[in-house]
Structures are given as C-alpha cells and as structure tokens.
Length: 297
Image: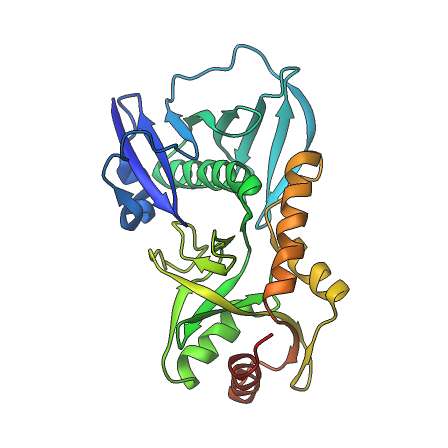
C-alpha cells in the first residue's frame, strides 16, 4: 500500500494504491503535481483509495448521466447521499467504478481493463473528485484551452469542435511571448486576495500539457465559428451563459450547483468576457489578443 500527495490549484489531496495491480504510473500526467506529505494539521481536499478489489455493499438509484467530453458516466446515489459513478470511455467500455462521499472528501475506485482504460478511469475519477470537492471553495474545473501572455491567462471557451485548441495554437504561433498552460481542463479559483486565477492541471485532454503553473485570468473568450473575424464584449447575462456550460457541474446536486453558479457570478464581475466570431487564421488571433490583452475591467 502506497500513499502519494498531489497539489493542484493550491489544494492538496491524497491517492492510496491499496492493491497489487496499480501504481502511480497509471496517472503519469499527475507527476508534475506530486508533493511531499502535507504539514501536520493541513486539511486534504479529498482522499481517494485505488483498489481493484473494491465492491460497493449496495447500489444506489440512478440519478443522471455526467457528460465528460463526449463520454457519458452513469451517476447513482444511495440513501445516505453517497455517490457512485460508472466511468465509461468513448467506446462505452467500463473503465472504473467510483464511490464517493456526498461531499467528495473521501472515495474508493476500482479500475478495469488494459493500461489505457485504467488511465482513463482513474483520471476521470480524480477530475470528478477534484471538481466537486473544490466547488464550495470558489473553484471550478473548466473545459477550456488557456494560453498565458504577459503574466495573465486567456481562456478560450466553447462547445467541442468550435476551435478552442486551434485558436490557442494560433496565439502560440503568431503572438510573441505566449505559452500554453492547459488545453482542456484548467482550474479557475478565486483566491483569498479576491483575484481570479487559472491553474494548470493533470488533465489536458488529447494534448499532453500537464504544468504546475498559474496566472491571473486576463479574459474569457467565447469562440464561435464564422466566415469573418469580430470580437465584442459580452453582457453580464451572456457572459454567465458562456461560462457556466464550460464548468463541470451536476445540476441534480443543488448545493454544489449553487456554489458553482455563485463562483461564475463572481468571475463575471472580476474578468472581462468576450464573444469571438472568427475564422481559424492569424488575423483572428491578432484581433483577440489585441483586444483582450489591452483591456481591463
């Protein structure tokens, strides 16, 4: 049995490998976030036990499907509030079974399949644990591609296929002094000083960008494909409608959902939000960077 500690966006959590089948190499993308044991008295965000021999004592009632980038995970809940999530990949293969306490502070997960399936299962279990354990702390895990320039993070939002990664690659190609912080699942947190910050994470979709980095959020950019390039500042209502769908949420959990909605409302007050209707070209990248990097609230 081996326990390891990881720190993401200022939160420390532990993973204990309790069987003979799995090691921390299953989640190599978490290696940049590996830390020493926390100081005495430091509270962990959550604790997760990985044990292929884990079997729930009973099954909860199905309450919904969690859409994770096109992969649907079945979500169940027991009478005491305990969650169970059957994690499936894009082929529908069952990769993991997660059982977590109602507040996601403690969980156990059994992995299944080959190395790729186990990696997918454990990474998704960790994303769920992190997203919902951190929700009460002005923190959201967002579906976004984010670049950094001049010390600020610029976050591209939009539905799958709208060109988030394409647009950030255009920034990297044509906008001097930019670097990629994360390409799919950065963490956004309003810290104690009231600043909205974006953090790299161990989860970055198909692009291997697992960086322990952070920056104040410079802008949210909602992308929409168009036969022209145009950028406009969004109204408060439109900004809320743009940001909320990009956050990991469970609408059936009203307490966590309200926490995430509250965090989004605070982000809108602190960070400029834009609608970028654009082509996938250099001119679009220059237009968005010139607008977003020069303007502040």
